Amino acid sequence: IDSTTERLFIHTLDYDIYLNQSKGKAISNNSIVFLDEYHPFHPDNYRANIHVTTPEEYYPTLCTFFDYLESKTGFNVIIAAHPRSHYDDITDYFDGRKVIRGETNELIRDSNFIIAHSSFSINFAVLYKKPIIFIITDEFKESIYERYVKYLAIYFGKASINISEKEIDIDLEKELSMDIPSYNKFKHNFIKIDGTPDLPVWEVISKKIKSSHGLMSS
Image (cartoon, rainbow, N blue to C red; front, side, top):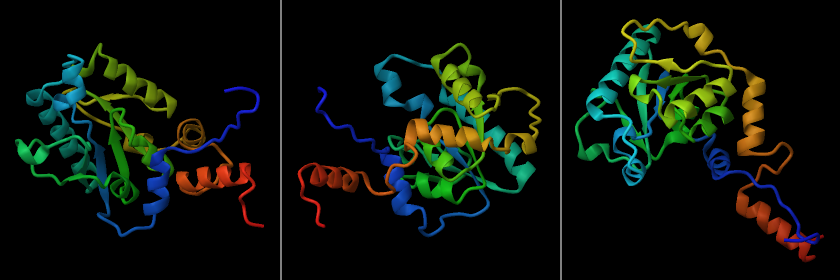
């Protein structure tokens, strides 16, 4: 890398997925999507010897919160399963709710709003301008995951909600509001720089290489 090196700004893979599938067939309407992180079972946590959540406490707490939101809104919660999850092989941790893996973009696109900890799939919520409710549980306290969630919540002008509290009473009008400048800032900083091409990454790179070597057709 020196003074002759050319710099090319490209977007994340999530933006390619967004471009390819933003107008596809709807999976579900009037839904709430939970961005699953496979917390108690994620293999990276085992490798790093990080054990923050337990399935015995984590999933019942989630389901109680989902029950609350479903009763308040009339919408069904759908689980956008983490790509490394294997929920088909274990207990029904979500009380019969739909668990769908590999279609997170479409689920978020068709949803009313999102529930999240700190999943990278928040990128899709930003691109589709979907409200996000950030949640933690008692088990998150004093852990690195609590810091992740709180940082993201603050970025979007929200508070992280502890769903382990016995009396949950959320001001949904407030929580489902969106600070659009924050969404635009997040997109620019972490997904796609303003003014870069709305083309697949491979095509952006290909055009740059051809242009640099005088291979572009006139």
